[in-house]
Each structure stands twice: as structure tokens, then as C-alpha cells.
Image 1 (cartoon, rainbow, N blue to C red):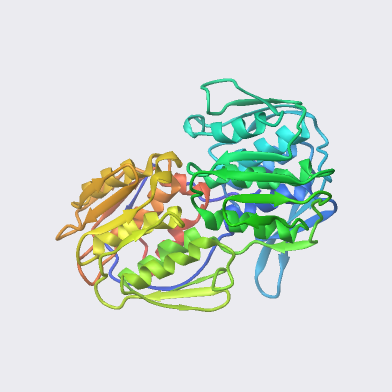
Image 2: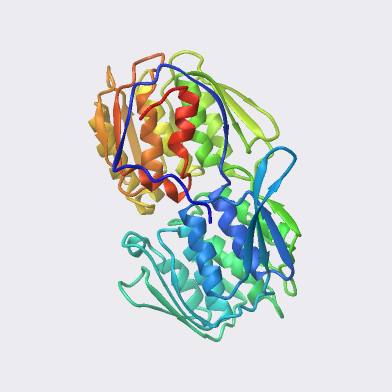
Length: 450
């Protein structure tokens, strides 16, 4: 596995007067972990190009190894650029090892789908993670699976990992799951459904409002790439017809991470630009590319190609009042861009922030106030009034990669107000999805920042 830079206990970012340049994005976390599991469950071998190298994917790769799935990694040159290629030997829905103890870190994109797949396949498995993972809800998924004959037990607090999975007797033809806590519960059931649909179709009903719908679109898109078509009744019900199975597409490319793109595009919108991100564009299957619409609403100039997006400043940003239910991760970047806006911005329908790597509404409110912003937080919204001058502050990151990356932007010199020296505590947390983030940020700042 690739070894990445280890950061000190904190990084001090100097004020940045102007940003400009090109950033090649790391692979999408959401796509990477889905593709790894689908490749493992499929018939045939899969070559995965440009898989994200980060803590969350290392967790999934480690789990697959513990389950007896064989994979290798190599570098290939196409034509002038080096690409990481992972070769995964599919197991055709039957895992080689029927018992394993799996450490899942704090990777929701790994533990939720694996829980469903292992519950269906059956065996004797334990899944656990870091302390925060044991505070992140999984009860709706477990309840849905146990309701159709799975045998999943909580070994700690009810509704949360750690979990013990034994061989159940699944009789699923119709199941239901809550949609208003995490879309990963539905993703997990969808990915496991073909393993249950050998003799009869399996339908999954969504109870309540389904949040983060673009992430479900990623799941459905990738399932199609692996040969499984899901029938939809809007966003209320999903059916996997009987007799389908996962088949390797042979070779699959992981596009750049659209959530990671948000930091660089916002930087271009705040502090000059142009900043171009490569690896994601108008052809993206990720919903977070819709982030650029919010930047445009704030007044930034955006141009897009098939596989790239570019942002530049067009004067002071305008305040925004918008619903961000569809892009909760990228919406965090808008909360920082609001520091450079001409009035009060409101981010609505972001209740899912509460159950992410940390309580992101509370954490964001606390750290924005350190910079001098007036912040009002609600159960599902955040309202940010920018300060006259952004203050210098030491930002706590709560072991949350997105907190560290977001708040680096407070060092920028925007058209409306100047950024300031910013200390980022525990910068190592970016290893979850973007280990080389601060080097990439220094690259567009054209400066040695730390």
C-alpha cells in the first residue's frame, strides 16, 4: 500500500493572497469502496484504475483480505501518467472465509455495505471500529436485515457497532428501511440484494424521506456496470429482479472525488483563480458536482469539460440560502465560503451532518465562531454571518478530514475580506480521504505555506 506524508500535530497556514493552478484529484471514496465490494462479489477478475489511496479504502482492502478475497496492486503508465491499478479476484458471491474479525476504522462506506453482504452470505463475523464509529447509527440497517431472517447482534450499545453476524435464514422478498438518517443503509441493502434474489425478486421500500439521493444514483450506476439492473418506483421503492448476479466489467476507472474538488473550486471562487480540478466534470456520476451550482449562485465563474471543472473569482461572493440535502459533504465547503459573502448565508436540510465523522453542525459552528463569524445552529440548519475581518485562530478538527480541509480556506484573501493565519490541529486526519491535501493546497497557493 502507498505510504503517505505524516503531518505534525498542527500546520500553520500563512495568509494566501492568490490561488491559481491545476489539481489532479484523488479517486472518489464513494466510488472506490463500492467498486471494491462489487468486484469481490462478482464473477471474474476486475482491474480497478485509480482507486483512492486513503484510510477508508485501506480499511476495505484489509477487510477483503481477512475474508479471503485475493487482490494485488501495481503501477501502470497510460501514456505519460502513472496510474495505480488494483486487480481483484471475484468470488462469485461466496466468500472464501466464513469467519473473520473485521476492523472498520471510521469508514461508513465500508461497514454499512459489508454488514449487509455478510448478513446475506452468512458465517461468523465481527465488525468494529474506532470510538466514533461506535457512535454512528446502524440500527435501521440491522433492523431491516434481521426483519427478513438475518442474525445480527449488537455487542455494545443497541443500534450501534460493534456487531456480531451469524448465519441467518433469509427469506427476503420485500424489506423496508428508513431513508432519513443515512443513504448508506439503502445502498447496503441494494448492493446485497442480488445475493438474495437468486430465485425471486427482492423489493426494498424506503420509509420516510430519502436523503442524499445522488449517493444512491452512484450505487445504482455501479451496480449496472457490474451487470445488475435495479427497477425503481421513484425514490420510494427499488426492486432487484430474480436471477441477476454480479459480473466483472473487466476494467473500471474510478473518477476523481467530487467532494474533494469542492475545496479547490471554492478557493478559486474566493481568491482569484483560475483553479482547475482534473478527474471529474460534467460526465461525473457523483452528485457532489452539483456543488458548482451553489458556487455559481454565490457569483463565481465556472466552466466545465467532460473530465474537468474550473472556477475563478468574479468579485465578492453573494450570500446564499439553499437546501443542501443532496450534497451534505460538499455543503461544508459552502459554510466556509460564506465567510467571504456579502451577507448572512443559510444552509438548510443538513441534519445528516449530525451523524457523520463528528457532529458537523456543532463542530462547524464552534470553529466558525473562533474566526469571528456569527453562527446560528439548528437541528438541521446552519446560518453564518461573516465577520468584518476573519480572525486568526487554531482550528480543532475533531478527527474529521473535512473539517481540516474546509478550514484551510479561511487563510485565503478574498475580494470582500482578508483571510488570516490559520492553525489546523491534527492535520493527519485528512488521510481518511486525501492524504496529500495540504501539498495540493500549497500547490495552488504557489507558496510554502507551512
